[in-house]
Amino acid sequence: MNIKFITLAVASSIAFPVSAATVYKDSNTDFEIGGRVEGRANFSDANKIETNDNGDIIGNGNSSYEDMSRVRLNVQGKQEYNQDISFVGRYEFELTEQTDPASDDEVDINTRHMYVGAETSMGNLYYGHQNNAVTYLTDWTDMAETYSGYTNEYTVASADRAKNVIRYAITTPEGITFQADGNFNSDSQSDGYGVALAYEVNNLGVGVGYSASDQTYRWKADPNLKHDSDTYYLTAKYSFEGFYGAALYQGGKIADSDFYAIDAFASYTFGDNMVDISYNKYSADDYVILDIEFIAIEYARYMGNFAAYASYKFNLVDVASGYTSVDYIGDNTDDELMLGVRYSF
Image (cartoon, rainbow, N blue to C red; front, top):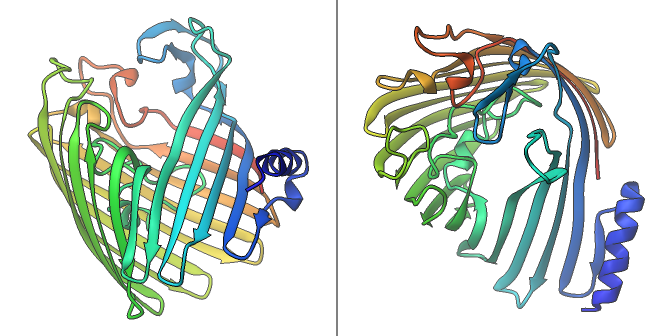
């Protein structure tokens, strides 16, 4: 493949995003580029508390406004080796402006995907920084532009993505999807695994899953000590004309403490418009700092590659005695308004 050609094609795609899609194609190879530029303005009393990257309080401001704009760029390729097997690779990263005044960097770079794999009629096998197996189920409720999908991020085996993951996935013509993964020494000195099974027919889907990890937690008194965590998942979704609804229940143990979580989402689409409501709750018996609970409403309008949205989160968590808002790990304990515009290519 001509590297100079690809470099010029990528540069051209960035300059003129409307024309971006497949930038190289021959009889057995595709190369694509895509991404988004998203301007986001957040308004919340939580923004008045200034913290560094470690979550330490470094000051108190007067402004409830915080810019949360971001840029994502992905490149991916696929080569059909023969009729039985194809090879794929994908890299995606996100850029946000650095907010820690102690940092010398102007931007934060977050790798979202970086994996290679093989796709066959007997299933697909991938390795690298990628989705976990159970992400196939948690994505059913993580559908809002802003406030959804908060309840599954505490362990490396349940999070949307993780490093050093090997994942197998297959979907049958009958609508059965099975995925299994293992991640090894990912983040937090961790090991974990997960499995997901779903059945989808017409407008209905149901799924079950399980994940487990042995990892350290920065918020524990001894951040170098490993703890066992495990989660089981029950989920369902339904769509009819412009309506979509999904619910997810999680239960198990987080760092040896019992927990449960609920994630629900419903939306109605009419023309280029969508309105939605979401509910997220997470409660662990022994760790109040993990509590999450909110209801969020949202309106979004989609115009081709462009989208504009407004989201409002009603916080339902009361700060426990002896704690402050910044002590909470998964979410702040204040109401929030998010206004956003996005161009995707």
